[in-house]
Amino acid sequence: MNMKVSLLSELLMACKDLIADAKIGCADLVFKDVCLDILAKARLVLTAEQFEDLRDFASQCLKEDDVSVSGRRVRIR
Image (cartoon, rainbow, N blue to C red; front, side):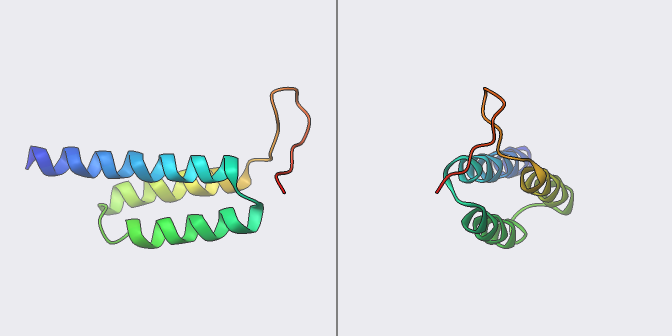
């Protein structure tokens, strides 16, 4: 049982990493599509609580503006 919990935690972190990487490297529309794809697949394997956590993480990433360290808006094209 403990191994299953550990595996699910690793899957959740991997999904969050994928979403964070996509936020950095993809255009807005592509990022949204990637998020939807990750969420659809994650729902099949994560617990309901973990899925809600991932959903909240993805929605927060979607709401964030692209701001660089200098404070200027950055658009990846």
